[in-house]
Amino acid sequence: VWSLKYYARTAAVSLNTDYATFEGIQTKLTASGGYPSVMSVNASATNALVHVRSNIIAADFSGMTGANYGLGISASGKTVYMYNNIIYDIISSSGGGSIAIRNNSGESYIYNNTFYNCAIGVRGSSTAPYFEVRSNIFDSCGAGTSSYVDLATNNITNNAALQFRDETGYDFHLAATDAVARDTGTDYSQSLTLSFVSDIDGGTRPYGALWDIGADEYGAQDLTKIYRSVAPGLTDPVV
Image (cartoon, rainbow, N blue to C red):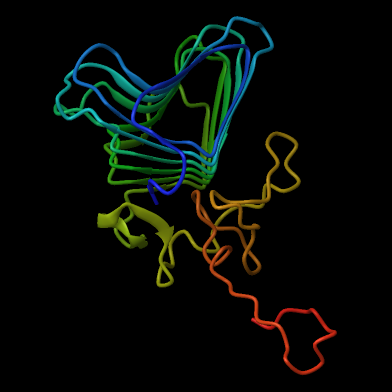
């Protein structure tokens, strides 16, 4: 959930570096011209590495008709790992030219993100060698994935039964009543490509037996640990 209690920017974030990590940033960009990206990385090394994790990326591009991006990656030879992010409102007044994630070259691995109200969620490029898109939510989007995506699996795209905690308030935690994304994900804790065990809030995946799809793991940060008043020497939590 977007909150001014935490670090937030209302301007673009751009790095010119071969090795970058975007983590824990709330960024919302308002733009009406040019070819803006809310976040962008320009890298030149053939083995450049970019991590984008646990961010909230939003925009107001309502006055635009041209191309615009949530995350734009340019230059050659990059590997991008993007997971546990919430990306929303990457869409112009015409609906065209708006792409939440685009990497012009290099490999991209996009796992467990939540996209909302984006013209296109993920689009590759003819100059990008490989695009892999797994376990993401694409809700109220014109398209989940578009051209030049090599592998798209276990994603949820515009499923009316999906339920967030407060969609109109931009709270994209999964609702307790959701039966679409909860417990239908894939365990990436032992993945040789991209391994992680947390969600956007830092909660441990899974909560229960199975992972959830999208940036949020339902229940992972919603527990209150209550300790015994009897036998206080025991510290096992009672939930």
